[in-house]
Image (cartoon, rainbow, N blue to C red; front, side):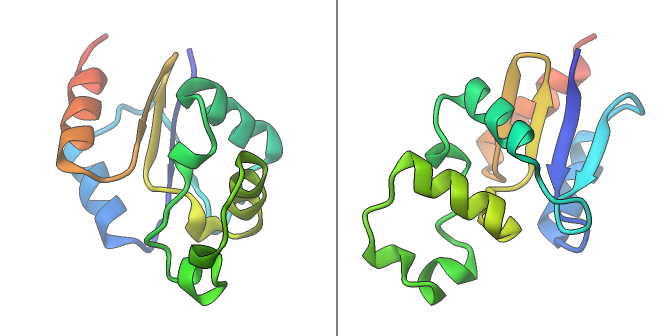
Length: 119
């Protein structure tokens, strides 16, 4: 069973969430800044969530800087931008088998924490 967490090592929010959910040692942690996401990985995440848009962060600083807020983005665009610029991935992304938890909303973190407690 795939157990993986995509995060940003220098992000205090990701650090706080990892401390809170306490992933077991069988989880693979991937710092997306030092180990960029591959096409295969983004496609696996999309298959679990149903869209690239669900993985895309509109609060990334470059979203406005690149004027993406002025464009109508397609699924293909979301995929391209996430692969091009790691800050566009909504973080953290926690995968356990066929379950995926995206982002840092309290509700999402609580759900991930519950799932990680299960055997």
